[in-house]
Image 1 (tube, helix red, strand yellow):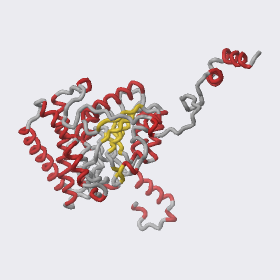
Image 2: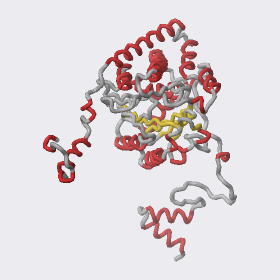
Image 3: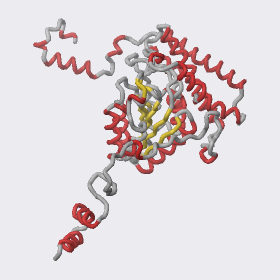
Image 4: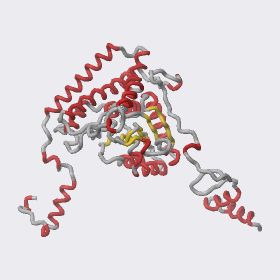
Length: 415
């Protein structure tokens, strides 16, 4: 019996054993079938580099003047939804301005604005349900506004007063809401990414997804790569949403990576990937809606890279004029600002007028100031609440009691 016939006989009798079947397949295939690679042969020795293929295109629905470029891509949202999008985006602008100034006046310790990135928040939030779980980084305030987090809750958290749900234990802008399925924000960069993937793994087979927001800087953390790989190999229904705003604090993207942005990492991990205009709220909405459909129907992760621009400083601890020119900021703020783009769209369709704009701006500012004044007058939490619901205190008590000979504590019986 020849070698070929021996292998055929072996595969025919043990077809269900994948090892022998794949071995048989390798012998008679003209393509390489090495484990872990799906490719072709070549006899030309050459590097594969970023110029070997076209960059991933940026999906958009509107131009800079708010005109729909392809009517088939118009999400055709209701007038009420569009107006809510605009109001939430502009309300975020006003709240940011007031709370930023309050930090400069010494009233709160820290703040981060969202100027220029409002469409990434509102467009993605509008495409999801409140049952979908959100892991934010620290610049996703619009998602909470969309879901119903109140102005008073924002102010109370920033002031760390007695009505702050976190009891004053967190830095300002570290929001969270169990009722709105918004996981409390953490200060360490990138930690939310593998956590989000783990949550999505637990949600497989249910009708919900997890969305995890992160910046271009966080994408350089090891946690990002672990999250990408686990999401892909474990088939997790998670939307990995990158806000690529051009800067990781003071480090521009040109100094962060040499490849084609963050989106190019998706295919290399086997993840469905979309790149969108992050200043186009309709494009972000469509992309997030599509990502959720795929994540639910296929139990697969989706990576979205929303290209945008951070108009404000990174935080109140940052002075961006030290690493970028005022002309650059002005260019983005005047030519491609997401809130302006949506307003142009609304005005050309008769959905919004200058009179409505003035009336809304006055009302929004009044609402923010009302919450601000109320929050500032509230007392701080009782200092003992620092230890409430904190397991470490009880563990320490038990430890000291167990090893009391090593801890000469006065009045030990009162511990």
